[in-house]
Length: 161
View 1 (tube, rainbow, N blue to C red):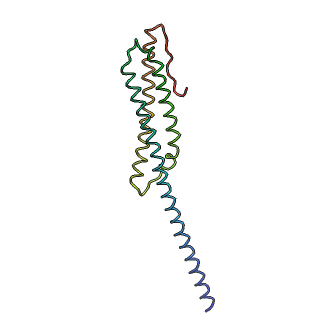
View 2: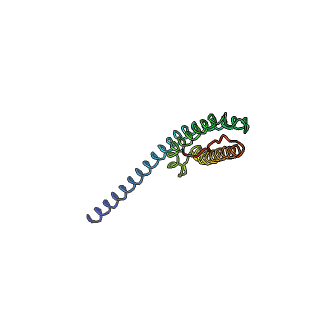
């Protein structure tokens, strides 16, 4: 009889230990998820600020390109290249700041705002990359056409110079 009681007590203790471990593990996971949600919110704020800076530079670039004729390209070229350099710098900065979001946005969170921020981050990164490449390619096309008509040659812009 004593052996049965001891065995039952041991089984109950093992089950209680398992339950306590399971509940503790769930609590740790919940705490980690909450920390990750805070990190996503923080990283997204930084990312959003960087994206705004890129959009400002892109608008400056678009303004100067749209108001520059082929004949004036050599006069405005240094300003255009400076803007493209700034644009490139911001693109590199945003890629670095996005590393944190890359690691965190592969998960699904219970907070729908965090999920929206992750989706927005991915769409914005893709759009910025496409716009940047398109702007550089567009500038290089303008330079090619200019160089065909002018004796004063201008170098094309290379990404990652």
